[in-house]
Length: 179
Image (cartoon, rainbow, N blue to C red; front, side, top):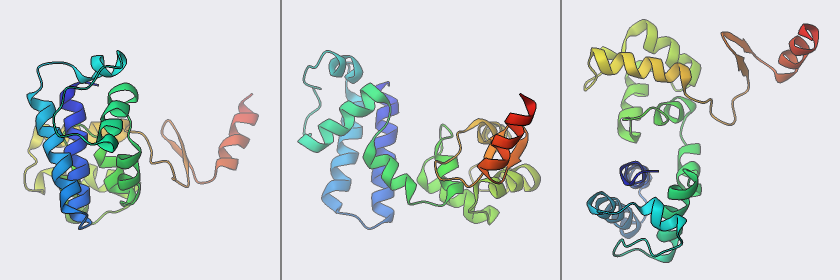
């Protein structure tokens, strides 16, 4: 991952912690780390691969591990845990580039859709342009990304192309009949 992508996730973590009224010192540490990442002239991912110090000031042990894991694997347990507590619609929106927790919350609130599939339908029908801060180009990109974004892990259905199977057993039965 690039420094900018890691910083975006750190900013998202700080926003999610702020919404949960988390520890203000922890929130400030994530924001400071994100700002310092944006200022860095070297690639943190390259340093992490070489097992060198990251070269980012004011990092604690836990935050260093989080950034290293983000740089190497592209995921973070802290971020996934915080995102997992959100409604599925907001989870799906957070996989769209350029959408953070605040915009995801505003979109689901304005469209009155917490469920991921309901959000996709209402976004396509009602239009995202009614939401403050979203113009025609951004609305089109969001709708396209929503169709390609991965399903949240705990969805009760399986999607196969344009067909949605309510239970995984139906999907398995269809696969056996096709074979």
